[in-house]
Length: 425
Image (cartoon, rainbow, N blue to C red; front, top):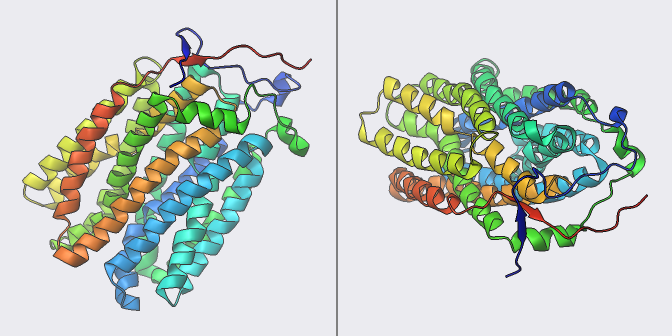
């Protein structure tokens, strides 16, 4: 394995140098956070409520839960795979075009999801189209803008703000989606969300980076292939991907199957809606706290604690009697841990490798997350149809949480020190 030298002082692996390094070429932090948070609020908020459609759609279309779960599993794979290419495009041409394209795909996917007459069409719309849309409107692209426009001393905090926005979107949108379903019906509710998703387009204009005008890029010390070879040969990058796989398995299984799990045990649909909303509300605080702490303590320790705490919380939840009160307590505590892995994970990637290829490398790490998401949501539906229970998947989630805590501890966060290369005048 290739040997690397480490530099403990520098926050970035190398400088990210615009061709015209004027202050006017950098977006203000407030503008980046406001517009980025608005986009993530809409994109993540809409998708966090998809579990509310499981029973209405399967009952209306006479489909199995595995059919619905498979479509959302494909969505997570499409999101992860497309995120790699969305990250490459955003790194090269800026975030504006990628976000606009993602918003259009989101609207088309929601309309198609509402009118799909077959399982295949439902998978193509709810799965492929919306997965591609999320790739262009969520963390990998938004964090690339943050990395390029926010100083390293504030980067983890800023990423925490963006992740908290996604959590606030869950708190805001899940009850809204439940209300729309009850008042409009599940099909019309999806059409209404389609219109709401188009609001991401004017917000994307606020993330238009002037130094990307006309496709003008930046000088980089590495090509894309050099950056990929370096990252995938680096042990800590592999460990980050392994931990993020577990994150995806846990949160998507809970987010999609929790409403049905509660209804199977006799609790009302309102309890499910409130539980998902509580997860979103408390994750606002959890992700913000993770971002702030990431500026002060080792991020690998934050990640190890989060994964271990998730395993303990799930274990306790399964042991105590299932009541609305226990659901709300579980949701609040799990909410503190929900997306709080996102800021330290992405900030670690930026700290080790720098920001020139941050969206792309973040996309690869997130692809690992989405493979876990695919397995979590699909196994939930598959094993439920086979056994009539979600218990096996809950136990897998606990075991994976302990494993993820262990694999994060050996991570080295120091920036890779590369040999200097001549820079253009």
